[in-house]
Image (cartoon, rainbow, N blue to C red; front, top):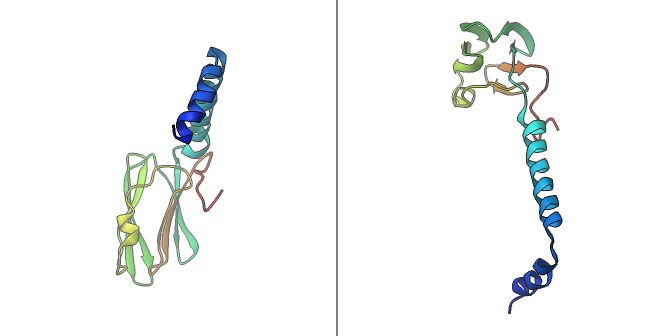
Length: 132
């Protein structure tokens, strides 16, 4: 008999229905808190920066395309269906374009060579390892 089987044989017979219910409710609470605290809210506004300064603040409620000047040329920010993304950027590696659609508050796309960024804001920010 290995150690797992011996632990199982020693513990399982002693667990009662209330113990299983407590374990189930505890696991459910952990899942719900994780979804609530790390899920983030949908954004309602986009802050567009160029050269470190705010270029424009726009609501996500209206579909539009915004041209943002930068040192390398013009970046195009696309807003559709309450989501935003950098659709075009003259930077060589296109990391910010490949990032795709942003929709939760606190999400951000940065085009460092062209010094252009888009940050979504709302009531609550999405938590990650950088802003926790």
